[in-house]
Length: 416
Image (cartoon, rainbow, N blue to C red):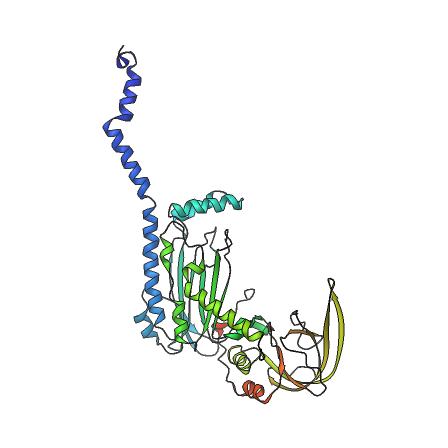
């Protein structure tokens, strides 16, 4: 029995979907499906290559030295932005560059699925990475003050969101000295004290799924060692076009990770040493923290208290001081202050002018009548907030010249 004779329609359908033309269409569709992820990966690779050229140019830029003309010659792809005079009369000009697929439909389609369910959304992002359509953004900015570069910053962002992206995988910026508007304090860690010229901190990425996914922030001063500053620009952007995608700042910035580990190790060694608060720490604060206040105090009385904290007994010292001199800062501090000392805990300041002030310190409390100390305040210091007022410590605080306090170094409100 002839199948074609008895079932001509079925036979025609079979020939149509299995014939030479159909096989060519299937093969072409397979090739397109195979090559489809290559297009967005190639575009991300081009963006990464361009940003690598920007980083190479920025590495040659010296804050407070490179002129505006030299900047435009050294760094490609820069676009001129805002330009005008500030209230202090200085002429300020900003340049920027950004390579991003934020508004490409190829990178935005994952946001159409599972936005209300984090697990589904993360799963969709993994699929997007495999297809080469993960979000990626590179941006850099340069501020020019009176014809010379005064600020350099960049960020790599791998978090896609609607309507706008938030969070950075790696961010870096130069500063003269960080400060907060209205003299509002911010936290200064022991690691910041250890290396104030080059501060590296890492934490969980905004969109982290795996515990090893992290982000990294770097701030370096205008006079930081060049060998450390060079690490800022040595990023490994190969993750831009591989299957895994850019998940960890440690993978993208391995040298910065090593710097962070080295600084943390040095910080721990210093805090457990016989000299946990050396003069260089004090000089670094005066040099790079424009709003830090330094008071010279003298012990007039002290009281010891036994404290039970969740079943653990500890000792606290409440020490009364009289103000001898405001070495640095406004002159409106009261003539008497009461400070609370804890051996293992840390309490942020409750106020500089009235009430008790908590502080962290790795050395024994100073409770000898007539003993003089230096009290660092207006900022939240993790350690070494009160130190003996030795002649060398006083000299370090009095003779150190502070960095300029510039508008571009101000920490935006709500971001610390």
